[in-house]
Amino acid sequence: MISKLKLILLCPVPEDQKPITEYLNLKDNSFTNWSTLELKKYNQKIFITFFICLFIFSIFSYSPSQDLIKWFLSNLLITINTLIFVQISVIFRWNELKKQLKQSKLFYEEGSWYDSQVWEKPFIILKNDRLLVSQKLIPILRRLYRTLTFLCYIDLVLFILQ
Picture 1 (cartoon, rainbow, N blue to C red):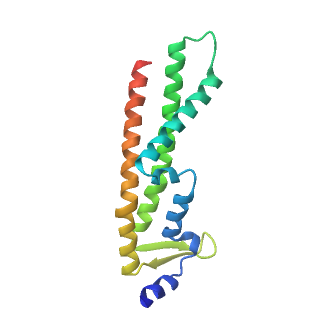
Picture 2: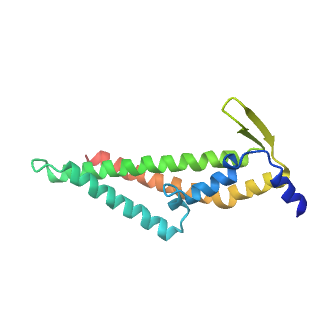
Picture 3: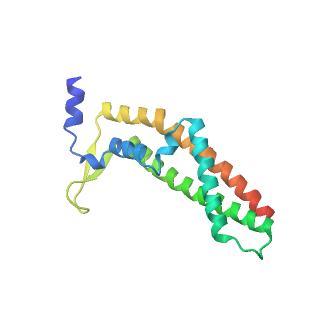
């Protein structure tokens, strides 16, 4: 146990550049933390966000002279596209973290952007990082990809209907 602690304490990577710190930041960030919720709360968050966006877009785009069905379909399309953009942004952030955790070498900067260093992860840290990927990140990404696929199908249907 002491040797594992020494490995972690002797890590030269600044705290804010460690992948585990990035993981904790993503879990605490209000833009990305909803993707870590249990399935029921995750779905509730998606639906609430959907209806809030739909309401806001509907308020700002209403015109009495516009056909009501076209207006509603266009607002649905805009809302779905907004949610797709958010999904892609969140997926990108989780994928970048996944890449960092899976790599055996960690690139970091000590002082400034031109002072790049490389740290070879010890086996125990690499093993823990990969365990984190398989147990936490892969399920999160799988859920995000399924949601993105569903939103893209809805987007395609709405585009065809319009």
